[in-house]
Length: 67
Image: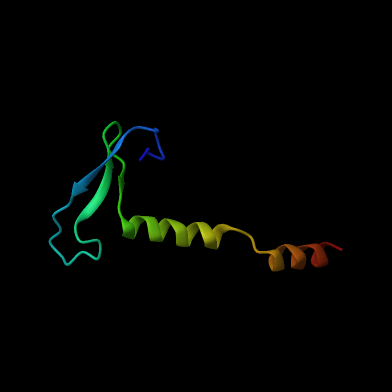
């Protein structure tokens, strides 16, 4: 697996969490830059990316308003 930031090598790492972790304590860490990725981070990132994308409806609405 390659890092999204620096294209470095990602290795599996076990993370000790003081709270009950939904990931089970496993994550990916970049050997070069230290970027950390687990399932919670990935799902949150995906949710924000989907919210940031303009939908077809909003584009059509903007076209109607501009006309």
